[in-house]
Image: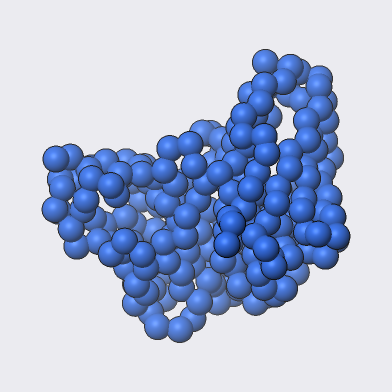
Length: 118
Length: 114
């Protein structure tokens, strides 16, 4: 079974400061990992994904994440926060090409609400 | 290219009623998944359809059902609504016929059950 743990339900940073959102996963097969962002009253937008290629993944809006198998982590970072980054962020895991029970199914963490102060 | 479209965006029902939600995937996407999002349980997988067939389902009671049409559009139905069914229901579509995991989400249908 897969699971995702996001450490910290709320993270607050100042504009221009480093953003670090933590995600640890558990998976019985090589995982695919994702970060999604959700703005109020909207759906989820994909920020970036890891699918067993490069371990450092760059996404949209200046975000990046590093897959560390030994630590079972996939933390999301951004060097300099912007006010527009305020949103809820979700880490998710898929069983990749395991087929069957993986079709269409992502297991999400509980989300981290990012607040950016001026 | 248009994104995933869900209708209606907002709806209010009373306990015991049923509801049908609609989802039009991105053109060319053949896989459609449904998720329920609530403050307490977070995002939970309901089911996935591909080529009009349900390939995968989550742990929800039989009151939750879905279907997919030949044009890949999908509907989900919830019968005998309960207060706990109040949630944001998200539809997502995917291009690949094997799971790459990347899903494209609609803006959701927010259901309130009174």
